[in-house]
Image (cartoon, rainbow, N blue to C red):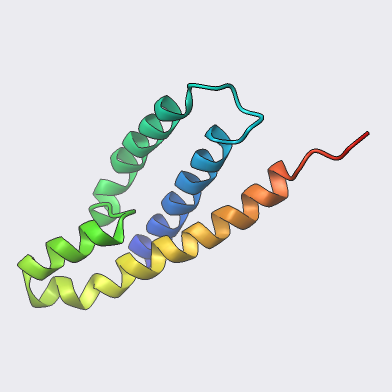
Length: 103
């Protein structure tokens, strides 16, 4: 369970950092879909063996409703981890990218 929590938090954090960086006004225009799509592919390739990948609470909820008791008992993780990962991703992105300072 701890491995799934860590994987989901880290993957969600990196996903948000990539989205923010690719859509930043300073980034080259037109490449955001490529960067975001490749990142999502990489997230799934890395975390499917660990936690069956979620990164999306709505997807996890829909599957858990049909799967039954064991999945409903783990659903909290797949809601909490992306939220924590998103908060961490926003903080990290703000720290590493910041805003341009006027000269």
